[in-house]
Length: 141
Image (cartoon, rainbow, N blue to C red; front, side, top):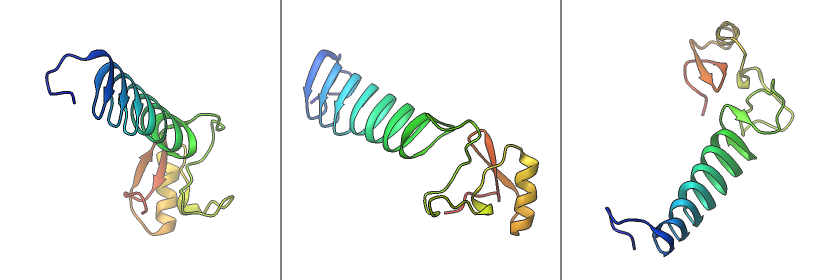
C-alpha cells in the first residue's frame, strides 16, 4: 500500500497503488483502473478524474451510467454539456415522467424568464443550472 510522500512507481498493483499506471481497488495515478480509480484517466466503477469511463463518475469529461462533469454522456448525469444532446436541450429532473416536462422542471436561457416562471409558481429567486436558469432560489429535491 502506498504511503503519503512515497514516489509513484511506473506501474503499480495493489489495494491502494500509487503509480503512473495504477491497477487495484483504490488506484491513484495518471491512468487508474479499478473499483474507485482516481487519476487523469479513470476506468472503473466509481471514477474521479479528468477523463472517466465508469458507472458513477465525477470529472471534466465523463461517460457512464450516473455521472457529473463539464461534458458528460450517460444514462443519468449532471453538468453544463451533455454529449450528443441538442444545444437547446432543457434540463430535466430524473423524477419526472419520460417525455413530460412540467413548468417548474424547466431551465430557461435567461434569468428574467426564470424569474417570471418563479412568480407564477409562487416562489422567489432563481438559480443557475449550467448555462441556463431555473425558477426558485433553491433546486427542488
